[in-house]
Image (cartoon, rainbow, N blue to C red; front, side):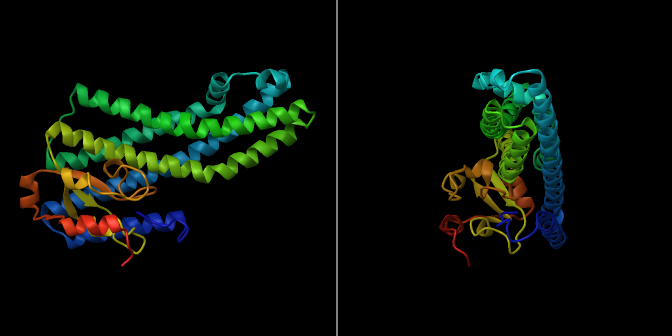
Length: 299
């Protein structure tokens, strides 16, 4: 769902998206309906992944805070403060966040399987070693973009502030309590990054499979409810060519092929063949549709 998440509670927005997509599948027939049903499964997998990551992040934070508290009881806070950025990042991972990284990889695998199931309905593809290696590299790069570039640096900054306070005789429990509060405050932003990156990974899977099969058309599917962004509305249930895709601009500085409408977008691309487009009687996007999406104006 491409949405202003402040409008509804997260679980309500998720259910609206699922209900709307399920309704679409009932209004359709044949291959088109089957694709949409498979997309419902993809969306359920995505939502479950986000919930699992939210729980994993909370567990990681709790485990790390305990580990840090134990560490400062057996070592001078100054010795930890003297760690290099790389050393501190490794400490943070090993002291609690490694489990969240593993969970991220596991959820990426689940998304991978759901998308493969959808794509196989259009063009049966047996992923060969090069595709598998490509997806593994993308998966690792995605995890690094989440943890190495966002979550771990954010935690490290708070840890250094806490250690500095301890070195100035602030009680450890008080300093760690302040760190816990900072981590809680940053959780919302971190989950937005996690959710967006999981979605982007899913679209990267679709793009990789399309390249392997030589497919140059993509069906854009997802909710068409009142929460849908103006960028997405003109494209829903329409087929976009590779050249049209390159002209699209979601206005968020993110590539449309892997980010769709942008942050928190629930829409996705499915590579389709000319034969499938004809058999399923799919509608191709026009130049006017592309222009309307790029205008991003509410209608």
